[in-house]
Image 1 (cartoon, chains in turn green, red):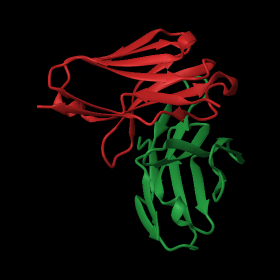
Image 2 (cartoon, each protein chain N blue to C red):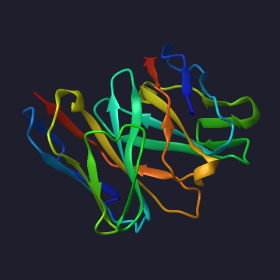
Image 3 (cartoon, rainbow over the protein chains, first blue to last red):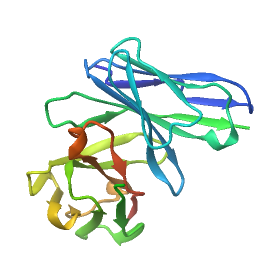
Length: 113
Length: 115
């Protein structure tokens, strides 16, 4: 099993450009999450999904949209990128009903100029 | 709002020492607590998970304890090695969300083990 994978690994955008980050998991997990990690701020939850077709806001959702059309994929979109969105983005997944342990992907490093 | 604090922010010790990393949280109604390791430029590796009903978990040289009523957890590393050098993150999930509404993270302890 590949676990949680993220595409791309690195990306540089100009202010105002749009992009989509892809998260995929092959563990048949119901829940998926997007976090961002910034120096001095720790990881913060952006959005999450409790199942196919459902999403919910986390602590810092502004400027991002998400979609969960398939159980194994969770997309994070930036419609008009801003320098404040320069960060490392991590995706995670969880299988409900067990220990509720979250498993993380390797991250996407995004720079917005 | 749940807040998680980790002390110290940075720690440097000689190889072979036993050490303790501290984590505190403001809302004791947690579902579970996870300790992660993060190497520079890398993702998060889960080290230990403690359910709210448990007092401690052990894995090899690592032991994590939980005192939910006082809002504290410690990560004990025995016989430290240079390969233990990394940032250690503590994170909690709330009971109200069944442990699935997302994790709240501390800012981490940056650990350096001197050879």
